[in-house]
Length: 200
Image (cartoon, rainbow, N blue to C red; front, top):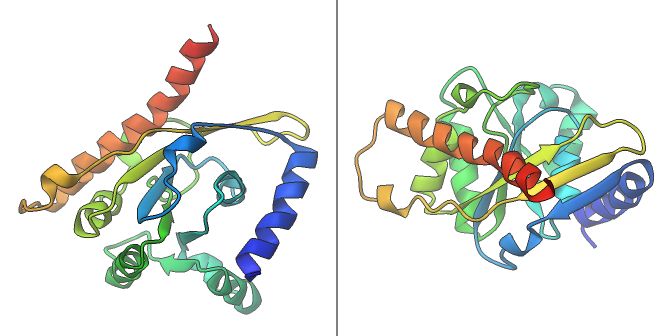
């Protein structure tokens, strides 16, 4: 068993003890093939929530500051995570993302780039659209609905694939990528609204 699988198993047990996790839409995750999972970002616990909700291994893009401490940075790398500079166009992070997708793996990205308690589609970074289009990979939107209070419910809502195939052969600029990323973020936020309507 890989280190990722071992730690995921432990965290899955812990999370089920201290939280009540409810995952809907798991059938939208293909059992194989490259995809990008994108979620809203409200807490440092979000990567664990996403990882324990999806049975396949996820290679997360994470802010470079997390890799500055030697031990923790080394652990993240062993788990398959890689750094990204959120303040500019990080070509190394884009190359790493495309390599992961080329190997038919799952790439995990939080499009907002940082934790955000409020819904703000304008916070979406253009990189998510760029990576999806250049990597020719569908996006799976995920909404995490929780305040991470002990023994309270965590709702993980997994939406249907967002296909960006129509843009594969187009010449796009950064504004185009940013607008597509905004649309992705809107879809993520709308997952909560769809769930609320189902419960009415």
